Image: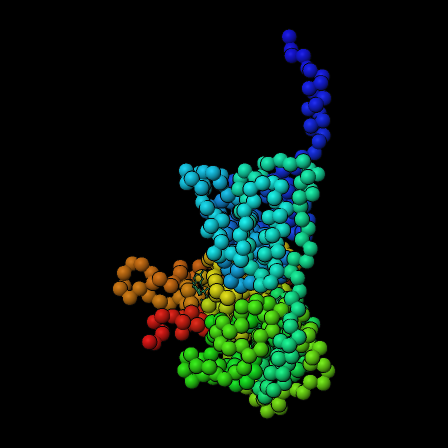
Length: 585
Ligand code: ADP
Ligand code: TZD
């Protein structure tokens, strides 16, 4: 005889079935969605595999990468583009560590991102009993992140996500680590209680209004200037105060210098843009207003010969105004005479109010000296770009890229390498804000394909990635990701057979190649073809132009292997002097 069902017990079970429950997986997804986060960049595996599936099922975009570092870079640049924290999702220990470089890079660059990582059993990890992928991830992430949190109970997920969002985007943005142990995900909670536990973050990046006397001090210094200069950094690009920044520059009539990722905040062809006269304006300026730019190595720490100092560490005599959201930034390298602490939008709008509409333009001698130096350098560059050597060099290839970007100003330009980076930055003009994405504060290689994927996914616009052949190698496998998601990314490898250049030889005559060279005439384009994209081998500017135009038109994943003279590059591009062997005591 079969078992007789107990009707009472079975009814109770039914009630339990209809009583809605939620769980850790669901709550993480709901918490992100509640805060307007709709995309996850990651790589699945224990314990977060189901999180990726459920997030996709819940309507989020889940972009799966081939290596966590690239997912991390993607998340960080999505944060830069959108002012919302980019989410990178990784598995425990090794996956977490792979994502950590990108988290540290985000913190260094002031990009908001959250590295969400699954982790192993706390009890086993803490007793070091050898769990699967055991690691005390929170402790390791802390010094590299702006903040780090761990959630142990499902009812705390809302708070954990809210704190991570606030930490990532408020004040100076940065990378945040959120540790989610495996046990958290299957924990269940009454659905209603779960819903109540979530937090929609109100005003995650509150405006920070500068003190009126700080604004006044800055205006007075600016007014006293005979040779003023504005430096725009990527903080200014991030702030999305484009119209006010433009008004500030145009109403004061001051020359300005965009840092690499601030290019395009105003079109690089703007008459006040002093990029082509950089080595003239830095030492000659008497008052420099930094807007979202730090006086780190990229600006020679505000001193030394670049700034007109007599010796490497000498003060050049400039007075500085620094607009920054971090109250600790001023005086980090040289004296800041007028710090203005606040968010760039609020600071610039208050400066504008003080500037009014009849601000005296800088002295004509200064403007004409800058203009003269600029036109001389632009003419010199035009001459170099007009040459057509065989094989191509960086200039003849980049003259093509310059035209393509001019014709497609909405396209994103991702850029890494040494010579490939420095020449692209100086040759290729940008026309719109936040379109140039590059190696940033660290000069890190490996951001290329992660940035490209994110730029395409977030914006839907075409992406052009100008890559050194070495730089490309760090993230090259993600061409599969680009093909899988069918992204409008055109990768151009400036291929000179090695790191910096490709003509070094092993001085011993031994069997190993020199440490900086690669396989000669490598056919990188076949990598893209392997996954169904378009591969092109380009040996002339005409071939490069045709292939790039076609890539932009078709929006098909494309990789152009642009063959460059292997003797064309210089060691470390424009920072040869930082090599220890180049340093004199
Ligand atoms: P770059 O490399 O372009 O010179 P940095 O990364 O050195 O730029 O500097 C960016 C600066 O901008 C940082 O000091 C950061 O605190 C600041 N910053 C970022 N976002 C804002 C903002 N919204 N308002 C004010 N300052 C900001
Ligand atoms: N590793 C990481 C993560 N970042 C780095 N910056 C480096 C190594 C050192 N490095 C540079 O600074 S540029 C570069 C390396 C390895 C590659 C230069 O070669 P390339 O470009 O082929 O990408 P060019 O155009 O040939 O100079």
